[in-house]
Image (cartoon, rainbow, N blue to C red):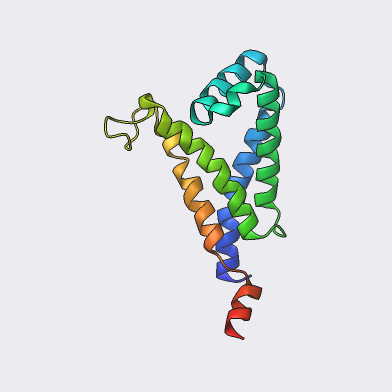
Amino acid sequence: MGLNKLATYVLRAIPGAFILNSGLGKLNTPPEAAAGMQQMAASGIPQLGELEPTQFAKLLSYGEIALGTALLLPFIPNKLAGLGLGAFSGGLLSMYFRNDSMTEEDGIRPSQDGIALAKDSWLAAIALALLLSGTKRAKKAKKG
């Protein structure tokens, strides 16, 4: 296994396992917890507030399970996995930037309340790295 392939696998495996575990943990979310998660998510993506809280929790759970699995499966192309992770991290970061309590007065640096979501910027960086990573076929086509 080449160094680039190993590096890409690590970029995918660690967040993939984390996101998959998170999704599995949300499968049986109680209604009160679902309402809290939905309220927080709707602060970043207002359309999510239109769903029923239990429906939102199930969709979030299934989405995290699908994304985590896609990141872990080596036959899913890096660009596709990167697109999924980018959309997911974009949603998380939208909650961060749209909640004044999450940032300091400058609107960028995390407050104590925002540190957990600010860390999701790493997921966005991983998504970008996956999107920018080329496949062997694409590299060979450019050379030929």
